[in-house]
Length: 225
Image (cartoon, rainbow, N blue to C red; front, side):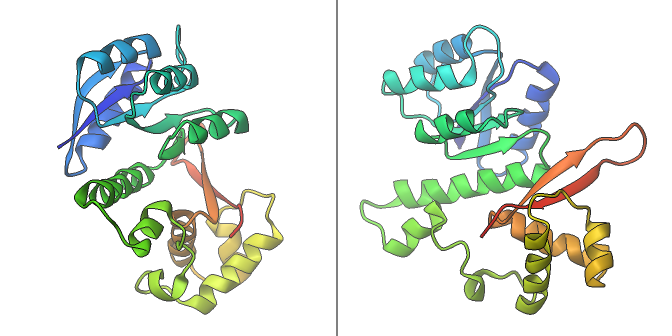
């Protein structure tokens, strides 16, 4: 089992993250703490494989905690799950070795994908002493845009290209699937399938907008190939 520590100062969010993590096979949450100081103490006393880390916390925030972790040569893997969108925090987290960065609020499927990717990473890095280039490419996502090999079943390159070109024209805008579907003359369900695929390969980011009533809206923005 992959042993996980959740570092989150909101008890409800921490419990939700725990349920999300443990719904994926192979993961066990062995601790929940509310700030970086508690996390550091926990890591010194327990074997941890992966930390689900927030940034905005009292006493010792997520970035400072991650710096302290590396100063002490504690090479525990980290996935950031945070409301922080500041590029300096994202840059710092990645330079300090974070294996993924999720912005709240996020879809469960996005966290599930992050954890599944982490399992693949572990299989490659801890399975044998030597690996092939293709295996490295998988965990570094170096070949994630190779559509001939990775396009999901039921998706078509020409349709994907139509949606991609439309999103490029509106690169700085957050768009709903309804707006995109109306322009391209496809169903909203079809549009969402392609947008979810584009999000999975890093071309699109998804923003969840919560209104006062009804279900939250999903907004999509093209961020590049």
